Length: 257
Image 1 (cartoon, one colour):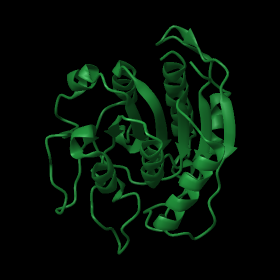
Image 2 (cartoon, rainbow, N blue to C red):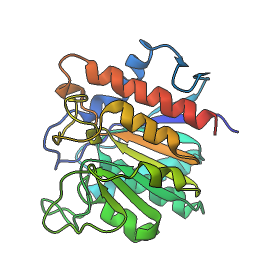
Image 3 (tube, rainbow, N blue to C red):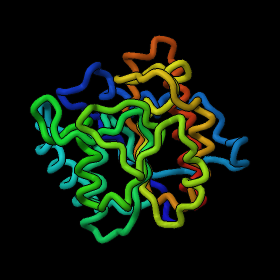
Image 4 (cartoon, rainbow, N blue to C red):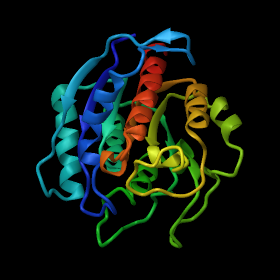
């Protein structure tokens, strides 16, 4: 298996409720150095990975312009799975999914989030963190997308059979998926009492170890992103360490297939 690649995408759209995800990639990398490189959960060491640094978009770009920027960057570097993208806000997922699809990869998306993110537009914009899953489903088909941990929705968003609320039992369904997967992990899926450092905290939801267990139960993750961590909302650095902890576990998971 080829070496796992890591890159940061410090993008946050103008529609964000609270700022700070811009700083997340560097904070996650820094706090990773405070952790053991051995995972007691997986009984494995974190191996070396290829860090491609951060892809800084131009300032004040629209969502559509950002999509073009990131897809062009990924194409220029000819990035292939396995990789982990460190956001940034959740909109980074859409251009990554489109890039993989355009390169001929066949996969399903597993989406951990407190929010559905399926509006057709939000605050007058078609392309942002609150609409990206609407576009992902248009690209891949609803049958190839699974959302879990949801506990809030806008009136315009419809609860379909591929969307599971946090209080529903979805763990067994995750274990049964055999197809190649792209994992998008919005850290606000975690109960804010356990992970307060997010831009849009939503009460309730699973604790961090429950989320990690569900992620590690997935059989065939080809690539992933970790998004919506805001160091500015993290007074104690508790969330930064936990974000790095999740990054380590996901990295080891990808390194071992």
